[in-house]
Length: 404
Image 1 (spheres, helix red, strand yellow):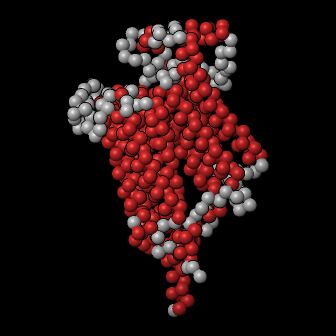
Image 2 (image 1 turned 60 degrees about the horizontal axis):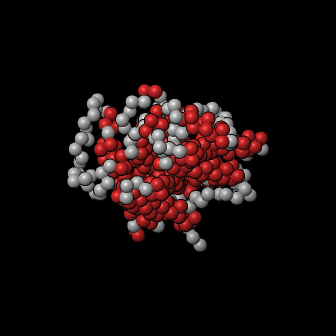
Image 3 (image 1 turned 30 degrees about the vertical axis):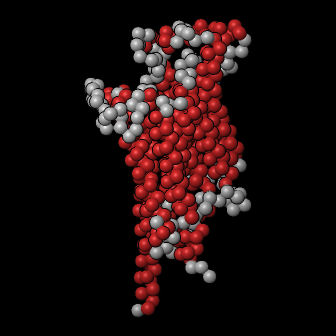
């Protein structure tokens, strides 16, 4: 018969997706489904940027509207577009070209509203059925607020490329990089909050016995899990920062410069990395700086992922973690390797649309792997392990008092 310790490490804390064993499982799956739809929106947003479609719609309303249908409506919309700065640099565009870029921007905006409905309508249903776990309604309000704010941030971003102050620009008209970065950061933060909430709900049946199970683990297993958990938290945060730096690369079109690796041209540190004043403008406006920062952050994230995977999967330690943790370690290592390959390939091939879009999706895969790994290690939370240790010490004192 297996011991309690080996039983915990063999079975772990799997997601409980069957409603017969977790009455809140449908709500958890709905939340994760919403998260998947956010990934779709991020992907479409990336393609919208890569096809230079983001400034094709020059107005915005919270509820949206129908696109142009008739030839006359399309010509009216095209004429409106011609009154804005971007047209001054794209005068060779035909109505057919305009329809193409308008379609991407319109699709991105409407997909955002669809994601809102995917979240809001089931929320009302599950609330009415009493299928939202106790204490989770505040999270739902927060998630809805994050999604609603994203629409406002998106329009704030687009407006930065539509103002008359851009009419004299000699550089390519595009939205301000810092606003594009804010828009993507909000989307990734919303996605992360959805995923974590979904994981939490699908793990609720383990909540009551988690402390008891943690008490059964050896000191070595708990110490190993705590180290991995701290590393995975730091790695996930670093992944988020790397994604933010990638948005700055995209906003400055910096991927089309320094298309060599590992050096940037003939230099390890490019000349002009700090040429803008005040100095902080280099962080978000200097092509050399934003690409250099993204390279360093990307490689640091990859090395961190390989390190934590090796720490957790080394033969002498792999038996000290649960199956979910092992899967998370494999996922973070493999996803990071794939993402580095995609990033270098995208750079060397001068940012082809397919590779660039895949690279953006790859960042979400790495981020998700980090979230999964960290959540799988929740049994090693300091508060939980302290409570387990205190319970164990109290038990020993009681046993000692009985013996005496």
